[in-house]
Length: 174
Image 1 (tube, one colour):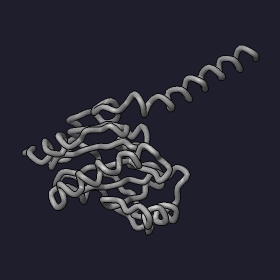
Image 2 (cartoon, helix red, strand yellow):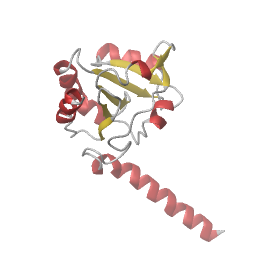
Image 3 (tube, one colour):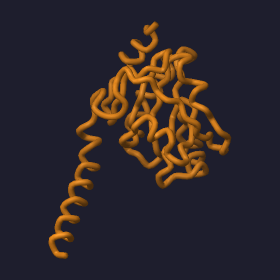
């Protein structure tokens, strides 16, 4: 019994350490998530009013930048200026979707946060984790960029992401 307890402690410590180190280690493109070239599978999630939203209405039309986000995520806050700059630069040419993860969040808490800190794209609510699973989001601050055909051209996590070149490639893709 003592060996099992010690083994469990080591497993828990290893998992905890990996969650602490993942954001620091995964700050470059294509460290995690869907492989580049994968065609994203659209899923149905909700808006902040509980109405269904089918991501198929976005995927495959024009480039899409998705960020998996939470109000409590300091890395997401640090990434916000880059997201805002991309939304401004590609306004009308690409869609920016902010997928709020349902961890310690409610639509009400997100709306309160957005009243003080507006988001640069449409904010959606991943109430049951469908989008998180479909896009293989390992953490908040996870960004996925899809080209016009819905193919993944970029994934990354962390505050030091440089996704402008990926957005330009997504715009140029035929």
